[in-house]
Image 1 (cartoon, rainbow, N blue to C red):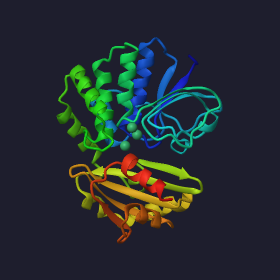
Image 2: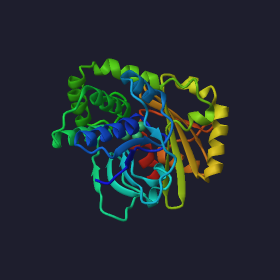
Image 3: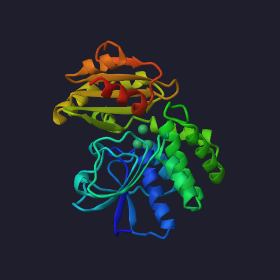
Length: 308
Ligand code: MG
Ligand code: MG
Ligand code: MG
């Protein structure tokens, strides 16, 4: 194993990106490899903060960019547009991911583990089993948190039977009531009160590139869509700034009601026609309601990409 390998998830990290990087580091440590370190590419969100406080563990160190030749392992993403600055010239040793593979290439062979599950931690659980490494309680809770977050407590269409099976196995190890813990965790993530509009649209924002077409899809979880839309005008101003600073064709801001499993969205940019065509809808005041839509990965990004 190389020295000083860093492990990270995507920019604007979510609970899976943070917890799975920590878990990947612990797996290496338990296998006797101590030259790897989990790091993060952005601020810890409120939901992830809940997990770290619950366990009393520190957030991984923040890094902004990597030097040429830096050995890295990626979890929870592969697209370079969502990764660390300098990734093009880093040495990618491994990817463990559950997303589409796009805008990704390496100069050298690598370990690449992809599964179409709801969460990276579900894949990590399988690797612990394969390698016959014991999962301790704290690690189990990190993985449960990632699964609950990514699958919205098993309600997202991205959730697979394997995610449910693994979460229940982990709950036995952790001796935790997964529904009770999971609801508290998700609730912590819906506290949006401290964020300015520009922070709000950046909590969980991903960029997608298809040829010359560049768009971002941001998402927040809430128990009340109307509360978020109260600040619509300021949010729109923040979105328009991001569009012009990054030359985006389109920006979609999903406000997801995690109680009723629907989303409202604010859609801006020169190519909102792509959104209207994709969802067969007409925007009203730059907004649309998407019945039953909660997953960017499964219900939004691919539909947009198909209609570019
Ligand atoms: Mg993620
Ligand atoms: Mg994930
Ligand atoms: Mg997510």
